[in-house]
Length: 285
Length: 182
Image (cartoon, rainbow over all chains, first blue to last red; front, side, top):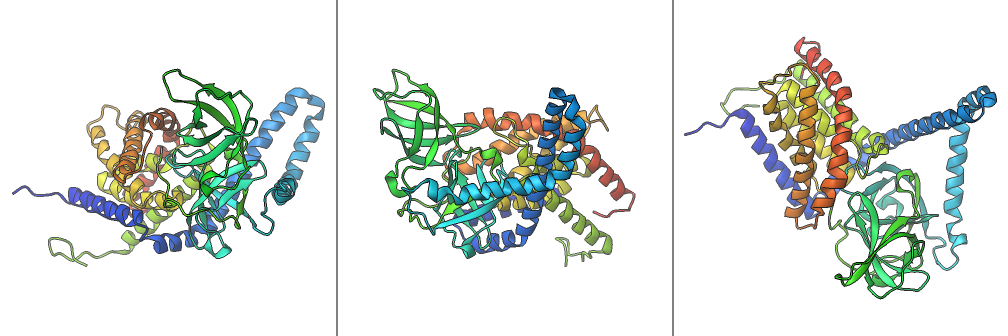
C-alpha cells in the first residue's frame, strides 16, 4: 500500500478543514465566531486604517508640494514649513468638513424622511480582497446596524449592509458584480438596473432599445423592489452601448461616490428594506 | 500530545516562540492587506501581500510551512474581507505546491525564481477563489475577473516580491541560525 507522506496528509487535512469551514460559513453557522474574532480585531483595524490615512495624506502632501515647487519657487520654503506644521490640523479640518457634509445630507435632501435615522460610520477597511468589492465599518449590531440598510455619502449611494457583527459591519458596494440596484434615468424616468462589474465601472442594464440616453444623464435609485430608497444619486452616464442584435442597451456609469477615498459614510437606519433574497453577496469577481 | 506514530510531541520554548512569531507576521500581513495596501490600486486590484508572503515562505522554508501559513493567513483574510471562511485559505494552500517547480532551479538565491512563482501563483489563487464561488452556487465573471483583477494583481504582486522576499529570507536565515525558532 502506498504510504502517504506527512506533508500530503497535512495538506489534505487542512484542505478538508477549509471545505468544512466553507460549508459552515455559507450556511451562516459561524456568525458568532466570526463576530467574536472581528470584535477582537476591530481596534487593530482602526489603528492600521488611521496609519494608512496618515500615509495617504503624506503622499498627497508630497505630491502637492512637488506641484507647488514647480509652480512657484518663491513659496517653496513657506509651503514646506506650513505643510508639516499644519498636517495634523488639515487632517482634522478635512475630517470635520466631511462629517459636516454628512450631517447636512438630510437637509440637502428634504424628500427623504431620514431624520433621526442616520448613523455616521468610519470606514476601517476597504476592499481587503480583490474578489469582493466591500468596505468594513466601525459600527455593528450593537449600534443598531442591520443587514440590508442602505449606505450613502453626501455624494450618493455607496451600497448596502450585508454582513453585521457586534461592533463592525461589511458593506457590499454597488461596484461589486453581485450588486444590483433598481435605478432610473432622472431626465426621462426610464428604469433599469445598475449592476457592478469586475474591475470596471458599473453598468445600467435592461434599458429598452428605443429609449433615448445621452452621456451626462443622471442615474438615481428608483425604489423599485424595496431594497433602496428612491432618488438617491448613483452616478452619471459616461458611455452608451447599443447593439442592434441585443434586446436592451447598456449605459456605462461613473459613480458620483469616489470609492477609493471613502472615509466616512452614513447608514440609513430607519429605511426598512422589503424582505428579499438572502443578504449574502451573490457573486464575486 | 501524540503524533500518528504514537510518539509524544513536545512543544519546546523555541517552537512556541515560532508560533508566536508566525502569528505576529501573519496578523500584521492581514492588517496591512486590509487597510494599507488597499490604497494602492491598479485597474481593479490591489497587491496581495499574503499571497506573496506564502509563496516566498514556501520557497524558503518548504511546502509544509507554506501550507500552514496559507491556512492561517487565509482564514484571517476571509474574516476581514467578508469572504466565505476558508476560501482564501484553500486558495493560498493550493499555491504552495507550485514551489516544487523551484526545487532544482537554475536561479538559486536570486529574485527571479520567487518573482516567476508569484506570477504563476497569482492567477492560480484568483481562479481557485472564483472556482470556490462557483461551487458555492454564486455567479462569477470569469473573463472580466481575469482581465481586470488577476492581470493587474500579477503586476502588483510582482512589484511587491523584491521587498517581501529579502525580508523573509532574512527571517528564514535567523531561524536557521537558531535565533528565531519556527
